[in-house]
Length: 302
View 1 (tube, rainbow, N blue to C red):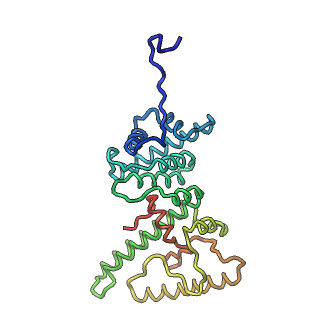
View 2: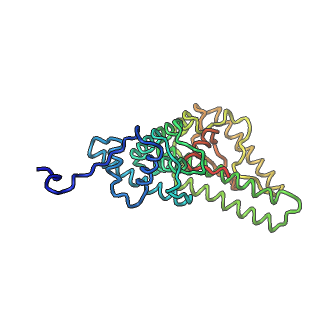
View 3: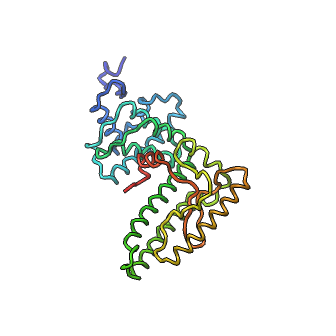
């Protein structure tokens, strides 16, 4: 005898048919997934992406639960109301859910949730474009750490450049110059600290360049004919500036000799810190690299 005929309620089965949902319905699904009280998250996601194996299913559901917790945090930090999130295309929703469910490493998952958060932001014109999806799928945890470091380094460089404009004139007081130099040192040290935290201070070989260069995210200087420019602005003191230029020239000559003698033309180290505190990056982000990291919430161009 069935439960229904015995007076009991039939079991409830929730299934999302993405191909048949309207934008409004997809928005309702997203809100249900994002609500902290969504007790049926595992079932919803399981039916959505069709996980067959119980072992794999549990692992992917765990990744999704952690991912949606991180996504909620990103949305809260951005001040985005769940009732006002942007609608997401059905295909994009499927790809984002699938990506988060496969990302067991938080470093990589942070890119997925970052892109998801930007896609849901009603004030953003960023969407989960196929190139972004394909790029995240091709990145390893160490790749993401390198990109995160480069994004931080370039953003700090831009900040120092803006700060230096207030003291790069003859009317700047010694106190103002001293305050700028102190702030600059703190910013540079924050970048070095991130490099240490990510284990990027002493990379053993140049293999880290290959995948990022192949994906068009970074570019390596064609040659060392011109001395590399320090990543973080120069001192406003003229004598110090000259000394920095001389040291940069020395670094350039050493790098050029190394490139002529070595069998490979790709750098082994991501960055160097000179004796006078400058940081020299061996690679830089491409235009696509910056756009990609901005879409994932790791690069702030403002």
